[in-house]
Length: 202
Image (cartoon, rainbow, N blue to C red; front, side, top):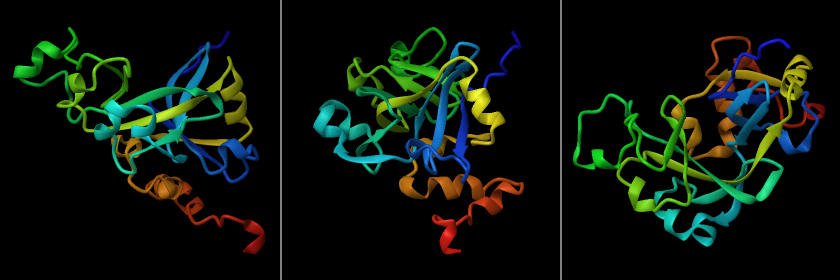
């Protein structure tokens, strides 16, 4: 079996050709990608449900808009927390809160996925992470692909793969994220950002 090059931490940006309504103009942050499959969350699907309505203790830590996001079509009754820890927490000088850090220097209750982005243990007391978190998003459900499935979609031209930035997780205007991510690319992808919502009106 061919070894899969991990895309963990990268963004999947839906191409205009992607027909699946679940992923129309979606920007997906890949939280896990290997030969067993892929898992990610859609960053630009806010719901009307406030974080405080479902996870009261975490509401104060959630960035604007303070709503739950639909991470994808799978397991919509489960919640995932994705948060950014400002700076490289592995190189910080010891602080009074250092006893609340793991042996790797990461805050307890937060598992690094890529760079400053990591998964939050929503079972942990929110106050354990409050001082360390830069931004937090709560997702209902996730996006999943079986072994080789994402690779097939990439080969079919369904997704652009680009680098993520920590600010993507907490974009205050998630509805603009698809265009914003494409616009910052230093390639012909920047032109795709101007693609009309309905090409038939062009």
